[in-house]
Image 1 (spheres, rainbow, N blue to C red):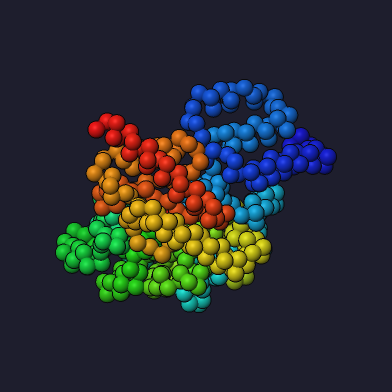
Image 2: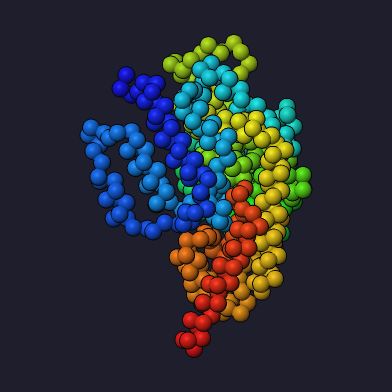
Length: 479
Ligand SMILES: *Cc1c(COP(=O)(O)O)cnc(C)c1O
């Protein structure tokens, strides 16, 4: 049939794909980390092919792989010191291919019992890692941290206002308030808009010198809340602030939430990876007392997007929040004690997200993760030390491999960080970002790739040195 091709054709296409991917995986470092941003060239490339009749599959495969190779920031590059985007591990790549082929529908248990049970097992494993009690724990796979944070707000609303499913926010007399750090992820703002709470009700709490949410100010804000108009809905602690890698004082937040009887959610999208390392685990102390957790597997677990989990220690809440009855959904599993994904999550049709993690564990084990995360932390420490040796100042304080730094000699020059960064990005050898810390712009480098070694760290330090010297001599010419 037209769509299927025959065995020989499939093999040829797959062979072409394999060769392209293999070439990319084995020579990633030879690519420029970031592309030329020429929109006309890209649109031109896309206008050449005949979409009415289609083209030869080999031509098609080359077109898209060339496009991706020439016009992407190469997040799989060992010198991508950027946001929390990993190089996909091979298990994750294979898992996506397998999932696409079998295309199991995970909405209803009876349609994909193996796949749903795999995901349930993964949810149990993660829950235990984070210190939840097995009998209370529940969770669901989401496409990303944004969906998991949205799920958390929906659960907190349902928990506080049991009738909200029926009446919506019109039945809520006082405006629900969400508290989080001023550095918390903006997906919380977006979720507040989506659920109709309104972003004005996301109260940013300033951070301490250690860049953690100031729990003293949080308590003060809770006390002075005008309870005639407002009602605290939840506190969202962050484990691994996107900009700084800081981890809020989760234990202290848990106590405050218990005292005020409000939902405690931990956004551990990135930093949750710390539970997989014996050395780092204690950094997350207190997370076990939370009501819910966001954890992105597509960050520190190095699987392809989108793979995230929402976990909760209130095992009834997902069912209560998302329940629905239909005539047309399969009912074969009605008599079995199973969890139906479509009545427990935002999504309906569901991809087998959990396979990326299950196959990764089958390939590498939790022990493989412990080793890899340990390596990345070590590379982070090396980068921190090398920068200090070279005269840079470190502006954040975290056990995670996220390093924010500036240079005291140049801090008074407003364009310093941007100019030096621009030199590095122009060279295309490394990719890093910037983040303002207490109003001062700093460089931000994260060891997010499992293949980054001492060599790439040293190369980055040297590129920074070269760019800094070039900037300094330009300045002296101007002065
Ligand atoms: C990345 C991130 C998110 C958003 O997650 P997505 O997977 O991109 O949807 C939320 N919170 C934090 C702390 C993050 O680092």
